[in-house]
Amino acid sequence: MNDWTTFGRVDADGTVYVKTAEGERVVGSWQAGTPEEGLAHFARRFADLVTEVELIEARLKSGAADASHSLSSVKRLRSTLDEAHVVGDIDGLATRLDRLTVLAEEKAGEARAAREVARTEALARKTALVEEAEKIAAESTGWKSAGDRLKEILDEWKTIRGVDKKTDGELWKRFAAARDGFTRRRGAHFATLDGQRKQAQTAKEELVKEAETLSESSEWGPTAARLKELMAEWKAAPRAAKEAEQRLWERFRGAQDAFFTRRSEVFSARDAEYQGNLEKKQAILAELEALDIDADPRAAQNKLRDAQAAWHDAGRVPRESAASLDRRWRAAEERVRVAMDSAWRKTAPQDNPLLRQMREQVAEAEQRLARAQAAGDNKRIKEAEQALASKRQFLSLAEQAS
Image 1: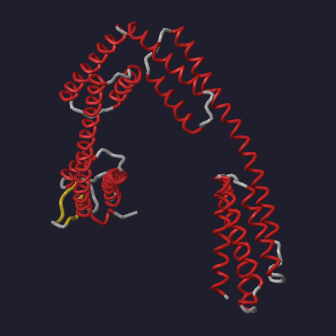
Image 2: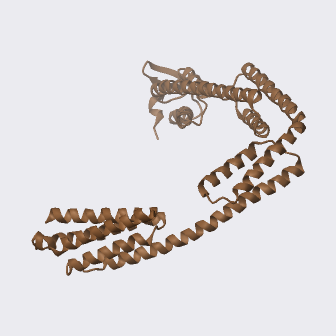
Image 3: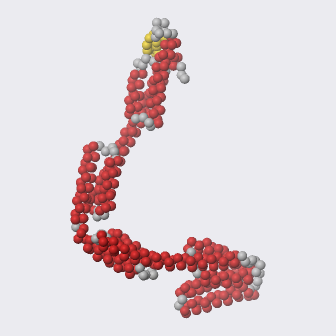
């Protein structure tokens, strides 16, 4: 703790002085005890001032204090410091208060700016709400959603503070007028609703008829999309009379359920088929990957040829498994190709039995494609084309390597 008594003295007649840069000045008189006790008394008063300044500074820097109030307190302390009846570092505290004045003014300025920003934002929010309400009042025909939104706007309006009273009143008049306009227009709409219900019933009967027709369709994608469109049209259409609305809805929903139940059954069967195909292909791959290719490349090549046919015959697999299977298949083919390359390098091209065999396989694949084309079987044609392209590619690579 600082010894503030060093900044003062007590003369023989009990007068107490404080030392400053401008010289000594009288701060009081002490007759109740020793000079040391007198200095300690006036030093405690100075310590109280220091404590007050420290508290103001701490609260100001932490943001806990109102900057304007803090600035007033700092100015008050600074203005009375030159005449304060205390003993201590008057000059040091004055410097500290001057710095604190600058800080408080900065904080007060920031607070004013923040309030102005908040006021501007509050004004912008309320203006946006008013404009939205006016647009709803003028254009909206979604009566329930629009009415709910106007209630939400009112609730949000009540939470916004900071707009000056005059401007707030003007904005409120606009909002109230928009809300009243919407209420009148909605009332007019529902006043004529009875006449529209018959038209709504006729429109929904047409939707039901189309849905019932589509319920037997097997064009899964287009039909599902159209049924979803019909559902959207149903929701957008006005309501018919209560009993008619319920009866039509049960028929409409029943038609949709019938279609999607059939589709689900077909998809489940297809998924089961794809899962079986996956197991077949996994078995083919496992057998191919287990081959000792280096020991007998020709036997591996024959096995690959058989595996290729079995692979294409196995059919489609679940989409999520296709990519990993293809990667494994390409890796297995590459192992065989590398082994074949090595074997070809050791055999003259004209004596290479693998080349002869691969040419025979290409010829067989061409014949298989021709038969598929003659039969007009698109699935077999596609599979035969893929097999022929693969065999031709292997043959081309083999001939280049030889």
